[in-house]
Image (cartoon, rainbow, N blue to C red; front, side, top):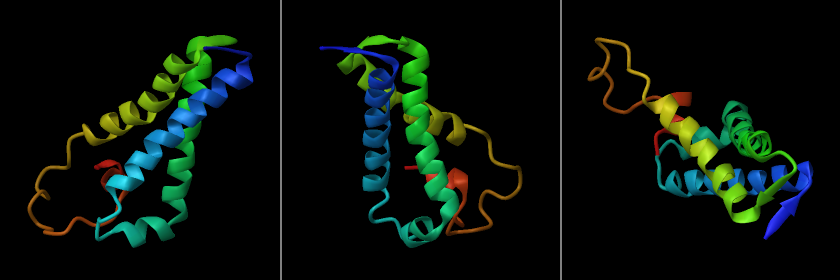
Length: 112
């Protein structure tokens, strides 16, 4: 199925971003720090940003017309690629084994 129009293409990308974020939250469901994430506006802003990134990249990639399934794949993959980029940044030296339970952070949010 071909989606026509920038809004439709971006909307399919947004739907992909929502699916990726649902997967993210599904993987965090039993995390001991989940209540910290759920209460922090910063994490909800990041979540909304990741969804918007899925729609934006899909729109940039395809413009006015796209196959719906491919646009959905781009929308899903954008948050996953960004998540991988964030978690691949090396940690600061000397602090890897000091804390046994990691504190809530943006980096920890993306590790799922």
